[in-house]
Length: 90
Image (cartoon, rainbow, N blue to C red; front, side, top):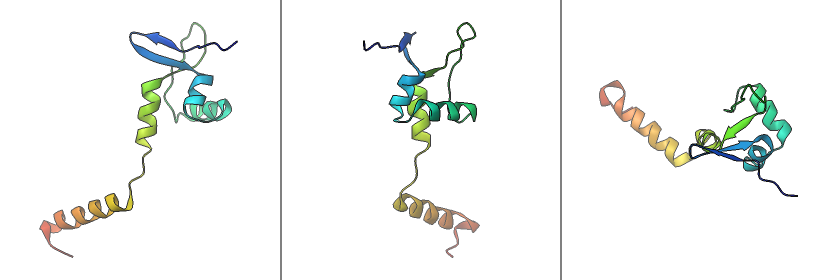
């Protein structure tokens, strides 16, 4: 039986640990490790002690881990050089 455990509360989608791991394409044990290291946002209601993950939090967490491309890094570097030291060219 394929049951969906996600919950909608005030228009926000909460996922259980299994769903969050699937969403992040990782294992539940890796997800628990990230939680224990406080690397990922989660919710743990006192009444049941289970972990829940807000889908939008997970999306934001992924987006924050974005690496800049070489082109973006070069632009930042050039901008830094041009705006530092009174705009002097090095």
